Image 1 (cartoon, rainbow, N blue to C red):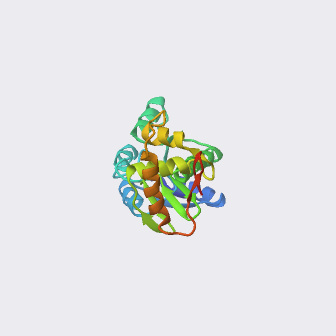
Image 2: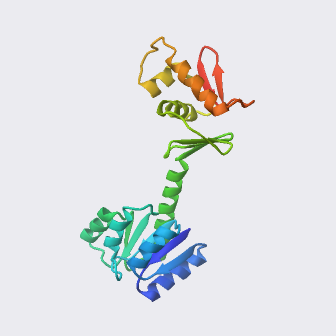
Length: 221
């Protein structure tokens, strides 16, 4: 992990940094909220370890400002460890809260859990099938690095197929998931949209990515 430690007590921050380094992680040390905010905007970190009482911008104020920009999960590390303090910190946007004094093993475990949780979430934002990448968050699709513009309905159909890579997805399932039909309306609405989707995805490729399973449905991959 690459960890930003925001702590104004130099002895504490260096002790944490040394222990994390021995554990195989890297740290950047900042002693005030103002510089921390600038750094978070400029650099990428996996986790932020944040003291509440820091100069210029305190920890709670910093969390409020972070709510407006992309940022990694935040663990508050503070001597202010009453139940009301924890509630305030978590409501302000912290992902976890650990009181001082603390056991380093517990701190490391909490940081690793936050990191693993974000990695799991990040991994679910993408689906890769052969040379096609689907960005679920941005609704973007690329094949062999080339972006493919899809309509909302086409993207929905592709997503339903991508949920079951290599498996046959029936016509009735596609109609239900993409249109909300719980019956086959006996129209060619599905065929029309799938035909357009295929043209966009394959673009004349000799290796079509959507296969027709005769009399049953379709398969992706």
